[in-house]
Each structure stands twice: as C-alpha cells, then as structure tokens.
Image 1: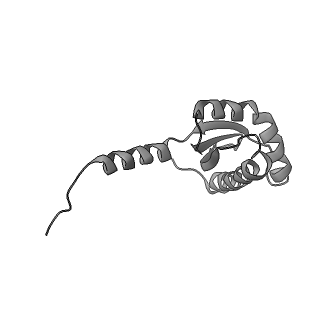
Image 2: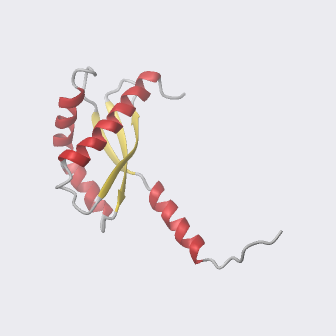
Image 3: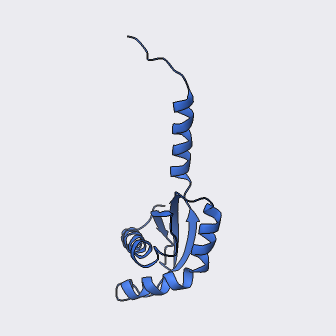
Length: 121
C-alpha cells in the first residue's frame, strides 16, 4: 500500500524544511560537505520520518552521518519551530544515507573507462 496524501504532503514539507535547515543553520557544522535531502518517508501516523540524505564532497560519509545523528535533537528542535503549527507532533527523525548518487557516479566512472568505439549504422 502506498503512502497517503497526508504522508506525502508532510514528507515534502519536511524535505524542503530540512534542506533549508542544513543549508542555512547547520552549514558551518558540515563544511566541505554538500548535504542533499533526497527523499523523506513518513510513517502512517506521521510520528517517524525516515530522511534519506546524499553526501557529496566528503572524505568520510560515515563520520558525517554520525555527526548528523549526534545533532538530531538540535535539528528536530529547529524543525519543530518551523512546522509546529502544521503538525500535531514533531516526528522522530531517522537519518539514512542515500547511496543512489554515489552508485550513479561509480557507474559513470566505469562507463567512461571503457573504450567502446561508436557504433556505425
């Protein structure tokens, strides 16, 4: 079963707000790292948000994820100040690394290393 309209609406709002929080409020904490919120999935009761993030230009993505998790209460508080009037409860935040961009980059590297001559008609 797919997500409800309410879940999708809240997920989209969280994605927008969290992107702004990372860009405007926490940019000093994660220098030299481009953090992108790629998608958000809400639980049916809207109490839990799974936030998928893509990390680019970082040497140690696991360390950045750990730092984000360590700052989860601060991030949730800032988020609560932004969306507190729109939702009954501020959801629990679960941050997960989205490997999609990394995999796409690896595939591009592999394909560029192959010496495939152009096909003639």
